[in-house]
Length: 186
View (cartoon, rainbow, N blue to C red):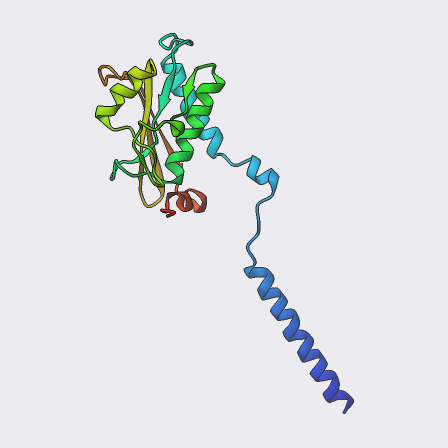
């Protein structure tokens, strides 16, 4: 009787421990604040914006504003994603940190605003919006997704002529984070 009870208790304990081990193995580990702070997305986008700033050295007036359009999907120029909008925000932040006046387009009514898309700059409106704000340039961009990477292209455009004043290309890994930011959230 004792042996049967002992075997039953040991078997139950083994099953319980096995269940705990399985559950712990399947539990999603949450990132820490330190891991979040060390994430390379913002520094990578800041570095891309800094590259544009270096190319534009001495060609941008500090007293004239710039506009940043939403970085869009190269295969669907009228759509973007969380990633595209985040890149635009971070590029704008870096230009602001460099002392340039950036116009926040989300508060404007005369910009085409597609739900969940951000500020899309329509070509015919680009000149009018830039002119009404006396913007010296517009920063535009596209991204292209491959099976392993996201290729980003940023350009500084002169709004009156549509001439490209500066351009910079860089690549992001298509990891879990960037992949989740590319998915449509409606």
